Image (cartoon, rainbow, N blue to C red; front, top):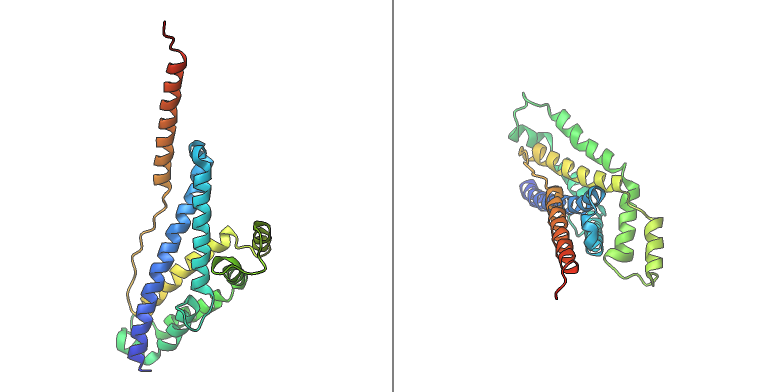
Length: 226
């Protein structure tokens, strides 16, 4: 295939995957925000079942999206594939046409791209576990999983820890931004939402509502008609 066409396809795939990583980070931040606000106030506990359910749904979505990003598939857009394509297409000839050699040497930029594969290869355990979680539960109803006990046992045997999830999300963002900067000479500007503020405002509203309801209840109890 013509390198120009390959580069355009890479650009489109990179943009699409970058949008997915950003969305996944936002979902992760929303789930993490629930835990943070729960630790600071008991207000959310009034509707604890709802927030716990919402958090579990968001965690499952994050796991599914991460598996789609990292598990290799010939027919899918994945981070490993984009890293490999960027290394192959960022040739010295392409560099000479698109960059000022006096600013950053080609070998330095090429080494940064090569290093991405080294870092990716340091993440085999969470990626392996994500693949299994996806195949057994997130994307399929595995015939060996017949109860929540089986599901819980499988998840505990193949965990994706909080630190690992954060690393996978951050590495995805860092890698795609680096590739976009080196291959296409574009520096992305990304705004991260934490959602902690919104959840704290919800907690305040619940506390106020609870106080009003308690006051109304007290007034009713203390009123006697003759």
